[in-house]
Amino acid sequence: MSDQEIYQKFMEYMNNPVWEFTESEHLMPMLTSFLSPEEAEFLTGFPQGSRTLEQIADIKNLAPDELLPIIKAHCRKGTIYEGKRGDSVRYRLWSAVEMFTRAVFWPSEVQEEAKAMAPHVSKYYMDGWYEQKRAFTHPELRTIPISETVESGTGFMPFEDILQVVENYEYYTVSECPCRARHNEDPAFKDSPFPMEVCLHFNELGHYIVDNNLGREITKEETLEILKKSADAGLVHGINNWEENPDTICNCDLEYCTYFKPYHQLGFEKSHDPSNYLVSTMPELCKACGLCVRRCPMDALQLKFSTEATNKFRKVVVVQEENCIGCGVCVHKCKAKAIILKQRETTTWPPKTVKDMVNLNAMAVLTAKGLMENKN
Image (tube, rainbow, N blue to C red):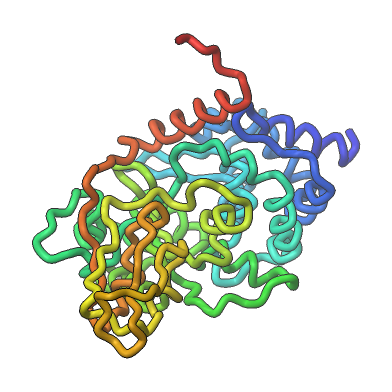
């Protein structure tokens, strides 16, 4: 079998009705710079659902002791996921998005193959590949407000109190932000000025990351310090968009983030799902310094002339509510205390589980493609 045929079979195996490799001049350079033909051939047919080593050995027709080193090498590369629960260890193929844009860019020392791949991924991402997510009803990340930016006395929903969320974890890890790491390896982009080691993972995912040198273990206290550092830098806290057992908190910038970039550059309707909070202003306190306007990742704030202004500029900050995601990035640095997050009139809940979120998005994509029967 030729190398071209091997890569073609790999792509066909990874493709599904919801997400597939789309045609582009950047596709093959992305694949071939990251995966050797031997690696692509091994991954083709590897279970996409979790299986034991013995089950995979039967599928691959290899002895378990011969198979394990190959699997572990792929775990370290970020192409295969290793899940440990008690004494049980299971493996599955990462999705294409996780494989080419996320796990491989977690380590502090990026692999040479990933460095070579980075420019191709960035071009491919913007050349139609990510367009497939436009129909998603639930972005994979949901905004979680910065601590202490919500109005005092407001009752938090349990999934939106970041201090309580962090408290509930048992194992804490941090990796490099894969979005900024990928762009930093691409000569077409300037290095990001934002903190890099701010991608937080917990529990089972955290163990996979540390066991495979994709990040390092930290304490709960270090986790809280990273969140504070990120808030100070103007990064948005984004947590997995499901209620039960989220395992990731990202700290996102508007320029290189996988979720902000489609919103600002491709015209997507959403970046992150918004929190249940909304910026509220106190015009009489506003100094019209413009810091909140500059920090807002959604262009939701503007300075406008107002009769309520008490500053020398006669301007106050005004909120475009439809754009506000309730992150608190603006509130966090307002010395005048002229803005605060207040609870929205209507409370929305994220999908209950990751499976629920995936199913909702899959149905939305299939409907958009005309592959779902209209049963009305």
